[in-house]
Each structure stands twice: as C-alpha cells, then as structure tokens.
Image (cartoon, rainbow, N blue to C red; front, side):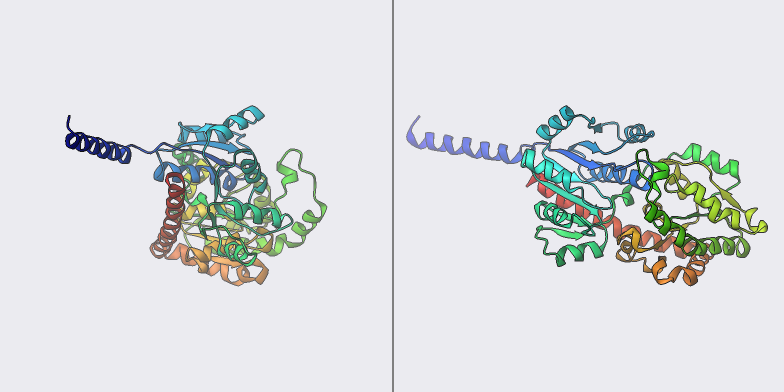
Length: 411
C-alpha cells in the first residue's frame, strides 16, 4: 500500500470510529432516590410514587433505587405493584454501602425540608453529584447545614416561591434554583375497584359529593407513631386553635348540604384525622345535615384515597397533599393554611390558584371558604377548567425538573 492510500485508509477508519463513538448509546446511569419519609400520612407516601412516575415517564432508560426512611404499613407492596422494576434499598449498612458504590446520582425527592444529613453522607462517602427536587426550605434550626446542602447540589427545585426567595436571600450559590412543584402532583396510584365498592356501600355517587379534611396546627404524631413523645406545648397550641381552624370547614359542610344536592365525605390525610373529623365536624353537625355526610372511620392508603378523590366533585380542608393529589388529576381543590405548615401552601399561588388558598392566620377562611366551596359545587365545568390549568403549570415545571436531571446524567 502506497503512502497516499495508507493515509486515505487511515482517515476513513478514523472517521468511521468517530461516527461509531458518536452514535454509541450513552451508558445508563443509576439514580438513588432519597424519599419515602413516613407512612402515617398519605401525602408523605405520595411523594415517592409521584417522583417515580416522573422518572418512568421522562427518564425510562435509567435504573432507580429507592432509599427510604419508611415503607411499612403496606407501602412497599403498593409501590412494587405499580413500579415492578423498582429496587428498594434495605435498611442495612451493607445495602447502603452497595448502593453508594453502584449508583451515579442522588436525587433528593420532594418533601417538607432537606435531609441534609443524607446529602452530606452521600457527598462524603462518594464524591458523586446530587440534586434536590420539589422541597420547602424554611431555614429553621439547622439552616446553615441546609444551605450547605443547597450550595452543594447541581440543582434545587423549591415547591413554593417563598422557599426559593429565602434561599436567594440567604446567599445560596447552587447554579440552578427554580420553582418546581411537589412530585405528588405526578402521583398516579389508584385502587379503583375497592374504592368504587366502598363508595357504593356508603351511598356516595360519582360527581355528587365533595371531600373535607381537617387538620390540627401540629400533627399529633404521639398518637400515631411509635416512639414519638407527647409534646405538651404543641398539644396546647392544637387545643387553643382547633375550633378557630376547623369551624370554617364545618360551616362549609353545612352550606353544601343545605344549599346544594351534594353530599360530603369527611376523610383523613393522616392517621389522626378520623377522630378529629368525628369530634370537630360530624358530632357538631345539625341532625338534618348529618344525613348527607359520610364519616370515614378508617385510615386509607394513597391509591385508595386517590380513586375516591377522582370520583368526587372537589376537596377542601386544612391539608396540602390531598389537594395536590386532586389537582394532579384535574379535580378542584381548596387549601387552608397557617404558619405551622411552613410556606408550602403558597404553591397554590405559584400554580395560579390563589383564589383557592385561604390563610387561617389572616382569618380568610372564616368568610371566604364557604363561597369558594359553593362556587366549585355550583359551577363544576368552570372549576374543572381551573383545576386543569393548574395541573398544566405543575406538569410543565415538573418536566423542566426532569430535563435538568437528564442534562446532569447525560452531560
């Protein structure tokens, strides 16, 4: 072979190699999802399937392992039924060591705050990157550690604009900080057959009832979680404010029953609220109203609750995540908030539903809640349209979060 032919052949081989390299599929990355904070609240359960659904939809080629705090009470089985490819990390040092060695990226899932201990441990032991998706940050107590976690992340999506602005005010230096809703908006767990059967059993017809959920200022975890000590100060605050915070809900229930053909379902988001519903709402209702009100006496899991919400005309109350579950499926939902719930309630303004947000600390619910609930009941088409617009905002921002994650994994 002469020199000219050799050079041509070499260049051709080199070009083909370059093309082959460019066209070769990029290595699949393994994501360790830090989530599943507790199981006594269907909203805290819903964070995880919501994020798993987003990963399944937008990044299906990447394997995911869940690093949970708790998946008891049937939650692990529920997750595996919906996500059969999911691997759940066992609660052992050996399992964590193996996960840290074999996974490429830590994704901190949505929740009430930042588990800075988890991101610090990951960074110290692996030196690998991490990102945070859909959290509230209030900088309490360990605010310095939380700020370190934010600064060390590749991205942080805050589930409310108040948290985002606080991070900026505190001088956070994370390169990508944006509004990114709670992943619960993407939760698609359902359990239709049992839910439909139960609704028939208690006399609730699809589209002909609304849901109501109360909440105390501080969740009484000492009643529903093992090893949780009684907090006298929080209990006293609960007792002082419960009539103030729940009376507007009770008044709305009465108005719905007396002024519309609708029935009302009193249901729980956490395991303490069945009792609260009975004591603070059902038992205090006039007898003519009770006849059209159903009190659910048992706790339920996220999939069953979602199937019930999907058959309702809407939801209102003092909780956050059942409304998120509703909006995620195009069901109208009203949130009543107060300072003990941090700033998460303000995400309703961020998704364009300020008219469905009432602040108990400003006594907004006392006058505004009942008219808002009646507006949803009496104008279902308009309410549905508003819910779908809010869902579209949440969907767009969650896609943005997944796009940023993809860039980090494939960059």
